[in-house]
Length: 142
Image 1 (cartoon, rainbow, N blue to C red):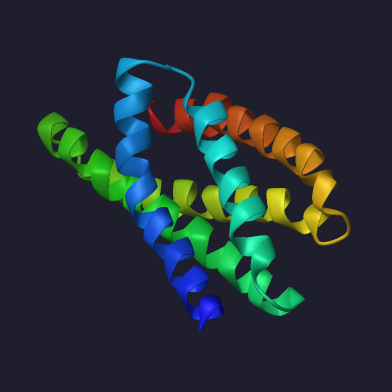
Image 2 (image 1 turned 180 degrees about the horizontal axis):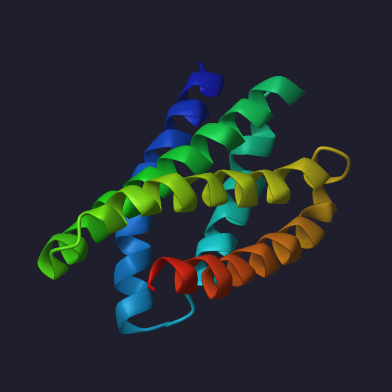
């Protein structure tokens, strides 16, 4: 029963977290890469690692990254509609959602060997996310 509750919590947090993170990033802490990846690391450490079995943990990481990216794109849809360029939404879906899946797995996979390796996964995810933002996002805005 606790496994099911934790699995549902992983998805629920993935869907809700971007809403609160966007507000936090726009008002108090303008460091979205850091905030988003630390949030993912906390979910990995306190929820996903508590699930039984390696395959379930990896599946939970994949789903968390997918729903996190999907939710973030939906919350940004308001800004996209205001700018009148709906193709940006589809570009975000194609590029940003997979990036969130990959960064979640970068955080998760080292922890399957040793939970304290999360620090290396977090560092790798922050670096990849920052590179993604500086290269891909700039390319999409041209």
